[in-house]
Every structure is written in structure tokens, then in C-alpha cells.
Length: 294
Image (cartoon, rainbow, N blue to C red):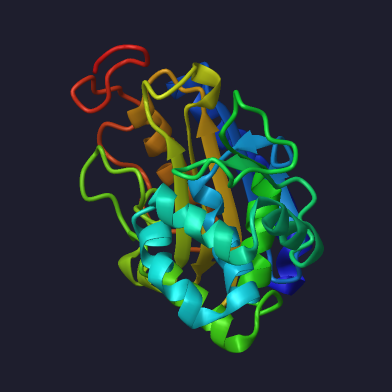
């Protein structure tokens, strides 16, 4: 795929514009972001350097920092809960293992080379686990971009961030995350849901989300990022976000559709049908309109 990077740049740009039009049609208030990184680390993107709020989507980065600091055995007890269950307390334990919030930020900047991802604070059952720039009104927070997320996964998959045992452990945990949506209310298998089953099984990812009714409209979102492995053995890193959508079911539909269409394009799988019945139609029984419901 390295030799095709320039060719794919133009077809991906056209696909991103199409997906933006679909998002606008389905969910007029939504904001989207897409990043695709090839093995040579070339970036192909749409609004991918815009800073976004995320915590759960960035937990693989916290796990990597913890692995680098204390190794596999010390990290293992918290990895499943943090990465597969997206448990926030376990995420805090990973931050502790890495040396604290500022140590996570130093690893992100110096080891991973990510300039636009920063853990602002993490006060989850521990008032002392805070960053040096802690703001009381924002006790939980992480800023990232889709470009950073895709680049992190590309570096991880190439084995550039950790020693071989640590790298293998983190990839194994990420392979165990959900590969599909078992119900329309699921939130953690969006990226792989519409891919061929054998592709989903070979790929790794971590989703992050802020649910409907959790917070103001500008914070509600779905982020999913990871590595997609094509059957011929080639691969690419991808990060997709949809935010501020009035109807959350459409947000998830769009992320799944976008991931599938990008895969079909890069894998040259012309027979893959990415469309599902009900796409673009809000079902109030699945997710109520933002600001309503319990």
C-alpha cells in the first residue's frame, strides 16, 4: 500500500467529501473528523487536526505509557477493565502506573510524538490524581485529534513504541475489544461492525463516547480508532469521529458506514455492501432526541 499512497490521496479526499455530505444530510448539526494513516505514516484526512474531547478512546495510549513504565505483569490486572469494558477507575489505575497525569503527557509527547493529545486531569475516586494545570470545573478530561489517534495506532502496530512483549500484550487486549454492535444501543463496536467478519476479527480498535443526555451538545460524540487489516496482509490506521448529532443512533450509523466505505475503497472490495436498512432514519425507540429521556 505504500506505493499507492499518492494515488489513494485523491480518491480518499473524494470519499471524505461524500461522507461529509451524508453526515450533513442525516444529522445537520453533526461535526465529523476522519484520519487514515498508511504504514509509511502518510496522513489522509478530513478535519483531523481539530482538537476533540475524549477519554475512553485514548485509554490505549494510557495503557502503552503504563506498559513502558512498569511492564506487562503490573499493567495486566487493569488492562481488561480499561480497554474492553472502558472502566474509568481502571483507566485511572493505568495513569497511576505510568507515573501520573503529567507522566502520561510526557510519554505522549516524547515517546509517541503526539503534539495535540493531552490528558488535562483525571479525578476518578482520587482527588490527588490531577494534572499540573488542573481546573476544578473540568475534573475529567482529555484532548486529542483524529490525526494523533491514527498515528498512535500506526506506530503501535509497527512496533515503534514498546518492546516486543509489551507491544504484543497491548495488541492482544485491543483485539479482544468488541468487533460488532450486538444491538442498536451498543457503543463499543462501531468501527468494525460493517466490515467482513474475517477482517473485523483480525483488526484492533478502541471506541470512546459521550452518551446522549450526558452533557451539552458540543460534547456528545462517538470516536473509534484502530488498525484495519486487509486480507492480503496490508493494513491502515484509521480514526473517525462524529459529534454534536441531534440523534445518537445516526451518529453511530454514520461512523460504521464511513469505516466500511473507506475499507471497501482501500481493499478494492467492490462487492461489499456497506448500507444497512434504516440508515439515515432516526428511531426514537433506540435513542431519544438529545435533551429528552431519563
